[in-house]
Structures are given as structure tokens and as C-alpha cells.
Length: 278
Image (cartoon, rainbow, N blue to C red; front, side, top):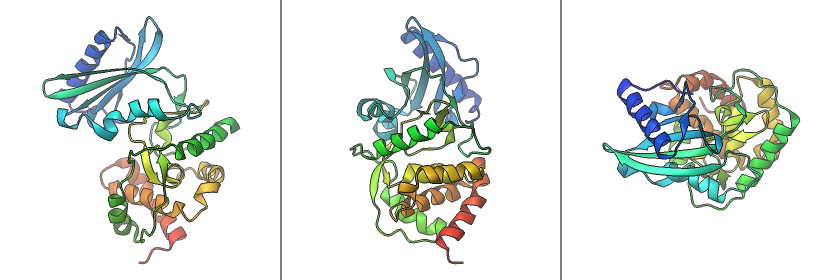
């Protein structure tokens, strides 16, 4: 989803991946591993005596190697129910080197293919009925998982929504969400939900709202998302979720290309749905 970082960061992360492979007795199969934002993560296929897996290496400064993002995949493996389809996290290996903390996460390999290489959907995918049914079941199940983790902070919502949408916030109802529920984190044709580092409490219907708004450039799929999640999106509680996602997109539009592409449709949706004041 992201481009390779600067040369020094890329070299450091490749060395960390090689070290993780040695420590976990893995053979690296990734000719073109997948980069996370600014080279924070490096992921790709590996193999071992147990078969093929997926290795994700995360880097942080030692004073930040804790908390929500650092422990998200681990807590998701421990606390989320099995009806939420996701790769099994088999093993974690931590170490520090040269003022960096690293975590290697070894996952079950999945044959699912991500729906889009961009978080924003550009073309309508051909997804089976079972995929949509499992998607609804997964989000309904996730919403009821008890957690003290926070995916979207109330302070952010009350600050950003008025600034970027022109709307007031009002009362917020909360439920548990993935928190980064876009098309690059969804696989098919058998549903697989990836990247659980940010899961936690968010406004009700946050994941469904994000998926809907990130589908606006593919109208048929946007309509299907709306149909699948009408039981939560067409409720008063979903208003804050939609406004929050809109604020996130518009805030980042000047620095992230895929948000810039989505900003126009999001503004049109805001004007049509919430009648923003001029």
C-alpha cells in the first residue's frame, strides 16, 4: 500500500527482517515485501518446517514500544471471537538494537487477496454473497466485544468534526471497532480482515461508515455497503461515525494522495446528507 521509505530506513528494516527470520528459523519468500507507512513495518511470506506463514516486522523507538498500536495484534488474537475471520497470530519475537525496538509477528498464511491495493475503492469488486454475509456477522460480533482500548479518541472527534465538516458532534454512542476498516485491509473471495493494531472503542457504526465512505468512487459497491449495514448506518447513532470519517479524510487530503482523491466525493456526501452551512 505504501512506497519504500528512504534508503537508510529500508536497509535497517530489511536487516531486522533477516534477523527475525534467523531467530524464528524461517526462510524469507518475499521478493517484494510490503511496506507500511514511512517504513514502520515490513511484511511478507516466509516458510518453515510448519509450512508457509506471513512475517510482519514492526519498528518503534523504545519509549513508544507499548500501548495500543504495539499490542493491538496480540490483544486481537487473545480477545476477539472466532467468527471474526483473521489470520492466526502464531508467535511474537521482541528485541532491541541501535536505539530501535522491534517486534516480529508470525501469522498464519492466507490465500485471500486484498480487495484493493489502495484503501479507497476505485472499481466495483465481484464479491460473493457469502462474503457480504460474513462481513456483517463479523462487524456485529466485533461491536459487542468488551475492551478498554480506544480506536478513536473523543477529544479528536469533538475537535476535528466541527472544523472539517462544519457540523456539531452532540452525543456519542460507543462500540468496539476495527478502526481502520478499508479495502486494503479486507481480503477475498473468502473474507479475511487484516491489520488489527488499532482496534478498540469508536463511535457506533464507525467501521461500516468508513467502508461506505471509502467506496464512494465505486457507487455500486457503496450502495451494497449501505444495504449490508443499513441496520446500523441508518440510525441516529451512526451520524457521529460518518462525520468523524469525513473529518479524517478532509484533514489528510492535503498530504495523502488517496485522501485527496476521496475529498470531493466526501464533501458532496456531507453537503447532501448533513446540509453543511456555507
